[in-house]
Each structure stands twice: as C-alpha cells, then as structure tokens.
Length: 170
Image (cartoon, rainbow, N blue to C red; front, side, top):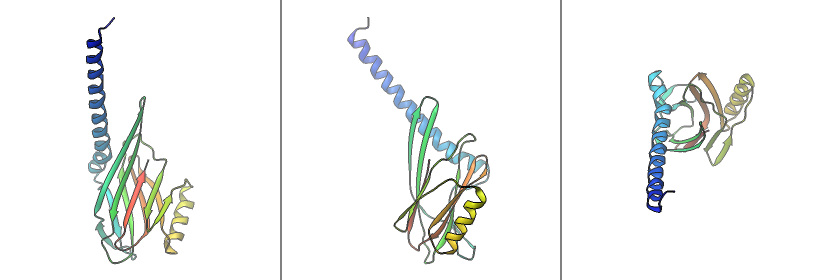
C-alpha cells in the first residue's frame, strides 16, 4: 500500500506529464496545420480577389483560436481564424488551409457581414453552382473544396469593405 506522501508525488508527476503531453499535442497540431502547406509550396491564409478576379494579396490576419479535444487516439481540432478586408471594395476570398494527410473536415462556419453561414455537404458540382449563384447575386456564401490529399480551400463570396471575416473548420 502506498503511503499518502507517495500518492501525492505520483499525482503531481501524473499532472505534470499530462500537462507536458497536452502542450506537445498542441504544438504538434500547429506544425501539422502549417507545415504541410509550406512544404507543398502553398501559403496558408485568406487570399483576396477583386470582383474582376485580379489578385489583391493576402488579407491581414486578426487572430487564430485553436481548440483540441482528445479521446483515445482521435484528436478533434477546431480552428478559427479571423481576417480583415482592408480594401474599399467588396472582395472574394480564398482561404487555403493544410491538414495532415489523414485528416477530414466535417464542419465549416463563417461569420461576416453580421451573418453566420453554416456549411452543408453537397455534391461538388451542385455546391459550386450554388456558390456561384449566391456570389453573383451579391449574397454571402462559402464553398469548401479539397484540392489535394492535405490541402483544402474555402471560397468566401462578397466580403464587405473594412469587414472582418471569421472562418472556422472542424
């Protein structure tokens, strides 16, 4: 039978190890999110385009929030990034984000222009038609597509001038 003092030390050691593991997992998740894009020559972030399709560069990043839940060998990660349209015109954005090779995305949310846009799964061609129809009508819309095994993009239609846009993937 362990003495109370030994149990206290074991408890302290367990909490320290768990804390170290949590920090290590968080750092690993960040490396997995950014590393593959840099290695593949992709630049993560929100690229913005004028309505005529001319590239305007990357939107300034305001902040990034990451929440990680771990259950056994499964990690569920939620990433929210906020960007800003510094231009005086409405723009379209293309959000590029890398993921680990075996990762999947099952939720997309966007907030801008005072609205919350919740993604829904549709067939690729139908989703693109719906996005283009909404974009051309001046509505806020998003289109999430997998470009390669570890690179996803989200097109964001009609970002107002001077407006922040938050993109959350899970």
